[in-house]
Length: 484
Image (cartoon, rainbow, N blue to C red; front, side, top):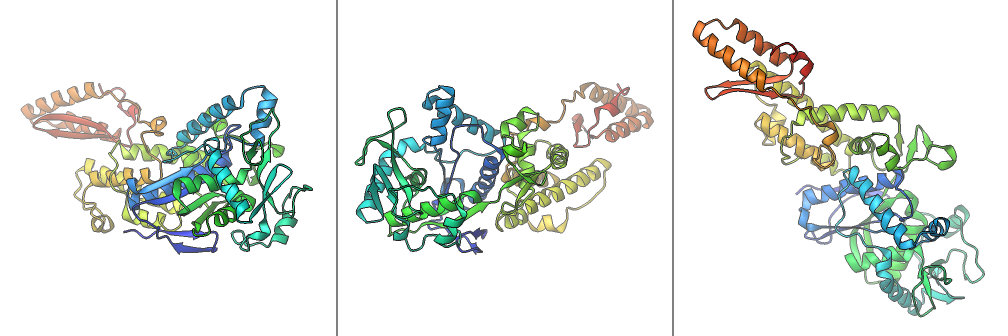
């Protein structure tokens, strides 16, 4: 079995990934707060962990991976949106959730196995909070319930910072009912105009952090394999998740591997509304940039490095993908190239994965040219050693390898489809020319037609059954003008 290595944020080193149960590999990733369109930073996290999901399914089997990504549908930002627009909260969250799914689908992001909504797990959150109070890790104060950070000695180990450092570098909410400045809210009271649920501490709503702990416990258990998200969530969200989860379930270990993707920049600058370079996925899609192109640009940078969105990267990605779609020629996806799987398993080295695709695409073009020219050849030894013994099988390997990265798929690849080519007239003409040549033994015109077709990027196959004309990746219909 392929060995996967992942950089574990908690240990700050690359480690061999060995799941608790190879028959049920479990991953949780923090999803969006559904109050507006997903921006490009949201999209990068979705694409990164989609690639990891695809890799885990490839290595362990599609039926042996459980991927959970949540939707935060109770939050002060959502409340503010409702107050601003006058629309019901349920309507806003339902609409925005579907926007997110549609936009991520346009990028080729597969839907996780579970997509829990926070509001469906309020009861589980209340139970977890009650347990934390009982064990002395949380306390009630003025209708709020707060987690006592000092009660958990390992707080800060994920980010590697001391509590004092975190206080100095964070916006800590100052409140008179807090015992300590770092204590964070598990439950807070709700006024009649805000969403609220009954609880032992009065009508209220959960804090942000508790939802992920409650949902991951219910769906994945007290200990699971991977927890992921953007590195902006490392503190305070993920630190708080670890603290409350480990204190609520001390017999478990919560997440064993932590993965964080770096942030996104635009033309070398941090994306922000104040700089005027903030845009959503939908903004780009509406500008006519295909989702597959957006995904390609993201894959070209390693997930732990800042990704710089540049116009020239978009142009280059589109050109490359158009070529690759022509190379694939609709070949059914086979098993991905083992060498590519091996490199992708080295901490999601997507740029090396793209290198292998480029390598296979170049070889496929060359092999097909030789086929058209009748040149005898053998595939390279690297391919033969990996069981790829024909051009057709290499094409299937190319498609399967691309699909592993979530590109050249039917779902998002229609934009680059080859133009329809009606070669029936030329096929008929070539058949008639061939018949006459066999009679007269003058093959001049037949050779001229064949050469013109090959020059236009058409593969010519002639047999006892007849003539077959097949457009290749180099097909240029303009070069066929005047032949019929």
